[in-house]
Image (cartoon, rainbow, N blue to C red):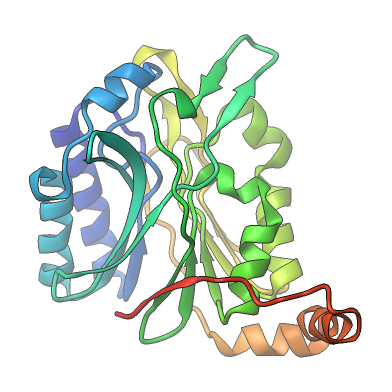
Length: 277
């Protein structure tokens, strides 16, 4: 999507894309990071954070899930809670119920060659818990954007039963050109998981630009769907979760890692939060 600093405009855009997804037979739809608000002004973004109960975006997307009878993974909304602001992702079931929440753990810090400077932690509080969400088809490891650069997060998910990884994002253009495709393919390959990465695209208020190129990657690292330009659009793919085990049998790195841990005692199962749909 090409988000703006107007939540009503963003909701209208997302609802139109969700209808396209539902009409194409989607069972699960995923939106990008900053679904309700995007700007180059972090203070303005934080000021637009609302509580879950007051989020019109959350309410309308829950209604859309019920209308279309689909799961919707909302990439992220800025949520205010106890005087803190979180960049929070939600999984909503076809009954309009929130079944999983994830607060972005790794906050974006970067100074780019073109002078762009980002310090997400100036206004956002980092999450402290991972979330492995259950759906009727697979377990989904939830993450947001900059999390992509921390492979241990996804290894944690894979070792605890994730079949799919969600990486809703708003990647900058310079970092996207250099790293977007290769990092997403790497996370798929090294964990034997499907990766779903819906992205913001184009120019946003204040001149902020995002890379786009929403991707769906299979467990062998092959790109099976990609957004091809800077216009809002829906990409879809048929997913056979059996491909996860097939890829892991071909390259059994997860099993080999577990065996190595049993020998040297260096690997202990990490704690992980589980959300049941």
